Length: 428
Image: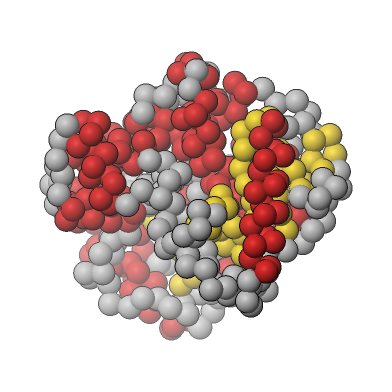
């Protein structure tokens, strides 16, 4: 019996990538945070399945997977092996079986954590393709009309359209609720229950299970709160340590911070935005700090106790959280057409919120603004940066400039060439 009811399945942007990878690899591993829909999506694309995390008969499936991985792989293909990291030897068994069969589209693996390499002999390169799945974008959750395709926009194509009025309270709700499939229809007053439970599960259980080490839960909580206060910034580890000292009057050493950040990353709790410099080719020195993000902005809201009411009265804080939500969506959409998301920051104090690099090397610059009254200033900043880069020796300027806006009711191109797109009208 299949986990996914194919008649009720809510399609995801990653579906096309899963189909493409299955045609080109013997196995596909879909990784990402817990509860984001990996099992449902993988089940939708499978013809048989084996759930290692099934608690039936005292986790009999897990024991079977550990004792005899080859038996687990028997079944109609593509065969889903859910939460493979619970029995790491499965990875090598899949790789070996793919080699033996010499066929594509044999297995779909899902994983909500990355185990250390102990017990895994082979990387799986060439046999197992990896895909990163995220929580739902606004288009996937039904909160974006999808009137504007990011893929077409990045090629300079847009059909102007009225997209409807947007309520600030709705944007706040989408951010606080997050993109977990199981949280889409909850009332506003209950929106933070699932994200809070997620954080508790990470601290109380998942962090220990990933390496079988008992970490300091209190210090983990301190670091997570600091990350929430620094959402959508390039805060260094030193700044996080100082932030914890300043806000919580507690100390935490650099080695502990580095260790815990690694654990959070391997649990797919974090989804940082790397810096961009590869295609600018100018003499300007580029900052190399990643922009910090949780896998979903709702986690930052939960850690900050940022209820919809509090955010309505603190639009400065909401601005950072709104940016995180937009960049989550941009990353989902961009990866669907083999593009990558970055941010830009140099030592001349020039910044670009989001940079999308296309497969052919062109790049597009995006500023993210909550209010329509901020569009003019954002467009001027983009134009100034483009002109500065173009004037430098060998500088390669962006091919598309765009302002992503929250409270805008139309998608259009300004006379100066800058596009303006509401986040609630965007899709892949």
